[in-house]
Image (cartoon, rainbow, N blue to C red; front, side):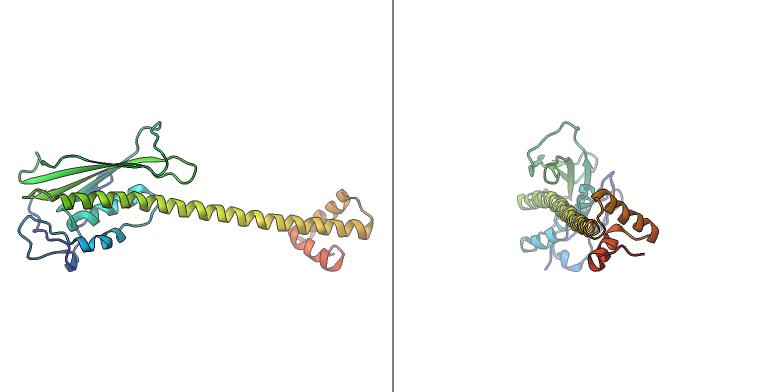
Length: 244
């Protein structure tokens, strides 16, 4: 399925960049180029948009996802793209999940005659549950010799929103995994404490010890045998005695 066509770059053409910015290579798949498109016109196959969305990585770092975004939009939607990710002031606040997308009017590129540029600014709160982390990104798409179509501009906005969604989804996955890990650690700790408590009770009943004496007996045996108290507690529950 063809997506776009791009004439070979000539000297002085802008390079696709991201981040600080840095060069981003153009996609070169044959199925992402329409070879019979008119010169300077990027032809977009709307049916291929879902596949473009799938090319955005799932990553908790906005810079990683938006850097990949530059390689997705160029040359599939525009001729070249530059992406810069920034952090707004620390006091910036948005409602959780808010995504603000602002598209500037298409304008002639003053630095490159014959080129058109359409900056899109994205501001979003990508914090995980209960946290705030506002980031901003500016995506500058450039077209050579012809103005972009409304469909192309809409696709760029759609890809920007999806990029934010990829970051938020990755962070939610990480937050869920962290909480599941904490819950598992808590469950294991409770099981261990129950086993140690039961072993102390057995030693108290067997040897007529106080709780403190039984605990000390188990702790001393742990140091002597270089084994964890939980492991010794299992032995006590099985034999009724502290291992020698």
